[in-house]
Structure formats: C-alpha cells, structure tokens
Amino acid sequence: MSNEVSSKIKSQVRALPHKPGVYLMKDRLGNVIYVGKAKDLKKRVSTYFQPSRKNMIAQPKVRSMIPLITHFETIEVKSEAEALLLEGKLLKEYKPKYNTDFVDNKQFLLVKVDVQNPLPRFRLVRNRNDQQSQYYGPFARAGMLKKTLREMRSEYGILLADARPEEIEPGRYRLYDDMRREIYGHENTVTVESYAERVKQGCEFLEGKSREYLKELEEQMQEKAAEHRFEEAAELRDLVKAMRLTLERTKKFSTTVNLKMSPEGVLERLKEALSLDTLPNTVECFDISHTGGSFVVASMVSFKGGKPSRGDYRRFRIKGFVGNDDFRSMEEVVGRRYQRLHDEGKAFPDLLVVDGGKGQVTAALRAFLILDIEPPPMIGLAKKLETIIFPDNRPPLNLPHDDPALFLLQRIRDEAHRFANTFNAELRSKKIRETILMDFQGLGKVRRTALMDKFKSLDRLKKASIEELQTVEGIGRKLATQLKEFLESSGNSSKHQKPSAQDH
Image (cartoon, rainbow, N blue to C red; front, side):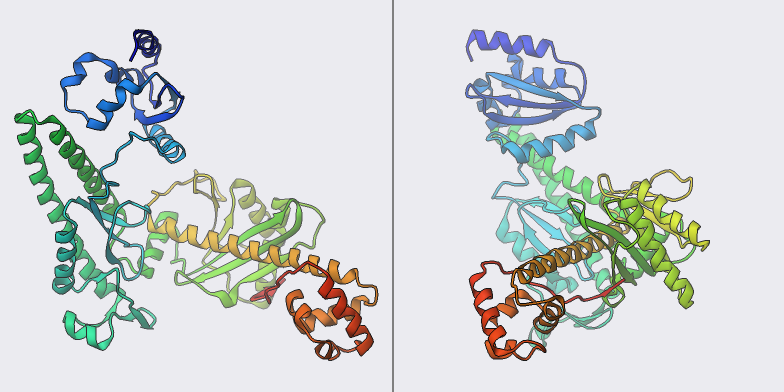
C-alpha cells in the first residue's frame, strides 16, 4: 500500500461515523474484495489499518487482503440487525474473494434436520439453505460424521436422507420396505407424534456432540495461540465462532418450534398467535391477480386441518366494474363468496386470510358490513415484512421468522397466489386462442366455441385430423380442410389447462 493510498484511507477512516453499517473493501481496479458489517463503522474499519493489529490473531486471508485495499465504501443503516441483512445481500451480489465462512468451507459439514416436515430427516449439508430447518455443527471429519448418523439411525430409529417413507393413512407412515425394516430394527409404522420423539432424542444427542466438539476445539485453539501458531489458532477460532453461532441459532429455534408439533399443534400455535377463540381448522384465503391492469381475477383456496382442500378452491372473474382496483376486487369477491354461503346456510371458515395489508383487510371487512353479515375472524398478510394485519384496533403483528404459525400462513397465502396466477394465465391463453381463430374467416362465435369445447386447447386443435375436425357440429369437410391448412400455417401455440376448480 503506497503512502498516497495509505493517507487517503486514513483520511476516509477519520471521517467515518460511530454508527452501524456495512463496509466494502476495494482493490485498485474497483473490485469489491471484502464485505463486512459493523456495529460501529469507525471502530471496526479502523482496525484493518492499525499496525498493532498485525501481531494479533486474524484470519490469514484477511491479513493478506489488507495490502490490496486502495479504498473502501460504507453504507450507514439504522441498526445492527439491518446491517446484517444488508451484508447478506451484498455478499450474494459481489461474492467477494476474501470473505470466508468456515461453515461453507468444503472440509466442514452440518447436520440438517428439516423439523418443519411431518417426518424430519437427518442429512449432511455444507450450507444453511433455509431458515426453517435445524442445524448442528459444523463438524470437521466427514467420514466420522456419516458413521455417527448411521449409528443414530440404529439407536434412535431416525430417517436419513435416503429414506422414502410412505403414508399408509392420514397421520400414519411406513418408514421402510420389509427388507430394510429387518435391518434397522425399530417399529416400522409410526405416527407423526411417535416419530417426533425419535427426532427429539436424535437432536439432543447431536447437541451434546456439538458441545463436546466445541470444547475440544476451544482447547486446541488456546494451545495453538500459546505456541504462537497464530494462523492455525485463527482457523480454529473461526470454526469455534461458527459452531457457537449454530448452537445459539439452534437454541433460539427450539424455543419456537416444538419437534412434537403435529398439524394440530401448528393450528394450536396459530390460534395462540392470533388470539382466536377456536382452532382454525378451516382457513380460506383470497388473492387478486392481474396483468398490467388487464385480466383481473381472484382466487380463494381452502385449507382444512392445515392441509390444502383443493376440492373447495374457487376462482372469480371480476363482474362489478371494469378496470384494475385491488380493493374493489377484494370487496366484490369476498362479498360474493360469503353471501352465497350465508344464503345456503353453510358454515363460514374459522379464519379468513387476505393477501395484502390494511387496504385489502378494510375492503374485505367492508363487504361484510354492506351485507350486514357477521364476519369470521380475519387477518391480512402483507408480504413485504410478512406483517399480520387485524381488522380491529390491534397493532400489526410480526411473528418470528421461524414460527410454524407463520409458515402455515405463508403456505396458504402462496397457494392462493399461485392459484390466482394460474387462472390469470388461462384467461390470457384463452384470449390468444380466440384471437387466432377469429382470424379465420369461415368461423363464427358458435363454431369457435364448439371447436374449443371439443379440443380444449389450441395445441390439440392443431394436431387434429380433418376427420376429427368434422366431428364438430357445423364443420364440413371443405371447412375442416381450410381450417387445417390455416392452423398449420399459424406459428402460435398456446396450451390451456382444463379448470380444476369452479369459476364464480
């Protein structure tokens, strides 16, 4: 680092604020070579350029990086938590050469337990790839860890990554085929609750192993430091830090997620989180979808016992007005749905969810007020921060990101969104088909409709033979031949999926 560069950096450091933020170290070509977060930008960044730091334990990679730094940038944020989020985004964006995370190092492994699933499995991974699962480690010796998991399978009857359990009836599973059942020696037919006890025992064993391994590493780190073998000590220190972080996350996760939590348990948790009077066994969720203000549609999905009840899904075209207004659309479809249930004397759901914030919730509530019908318990789920909005005076609620009640709400909302988008795509596809057939001069609306009712999609219509086209009422051989030639000359092809739920 030249004197000129050093002077420039020192000047930059002196101007830094004592505030949280993220810093980006850059080389002479302007490449981001390191990204870090700080509770205090001035204190943290200055440590990189103090001569006294050279003899302290530091990551060897970071030490070798410092001479390459010619300048840096900082981004101030409001809190340390915000700095952590921003750091993660920038790491994904820039993939800096000198950022080292020992959890991601190829020589280390984690044990992942996907506790959000009915039958969690224990598997080896190199990275934390979701926030719903529970992790143990990192562990250094892959061969020993694989052997440990096999021994755990024999001891506790847990499932590993290669298992393919079969649900034989609701809530009951066959874990292995007959041959493997003999090998593993545990009861092969389990309920979610009985298997959860096995998972609990396995996780307690792994946590004990992790703490035992952590203690060994801490002792080794102190020994290396005492022998002035600082690079080795630094590597062990980073591994210890990663293990402590994993154990801390696991502890926090365990306070929220009960490994014995069945679907009924999740519903109990949702009841508690939303202060409901009854268990939300039946949940209906609405979403509005449109494309640039056109093809405005709505969907309603139904979950019973925490699972999709696809036979009860509904789709809606907006009939009350022309244009794009999410609030009016929500008011209309909610009103139509519950006016019908009310008139037919059918039960309302235990919980109504709308995709959106205060505006969508107010619109849904307005529908009940207009109809003079008592609404069921209702919330909105605003996607930006996954904030739960209530129709009364309660303040917005943000559940922990690893809360099973939030997972269920997200799953229901995402299913409504998927279903609405599918309907929207079908309408666009149908419009394209109608436009193509309208270009053929020999067909009127009646025969166009008859053709599409017969063949269901433009792809199938194009593949139909002249004889098959003639089976449609009003289509003779001459017209069928002309239509066949027309379809073969058109370059457009659009598939249409037959509706799987009622349109309203």
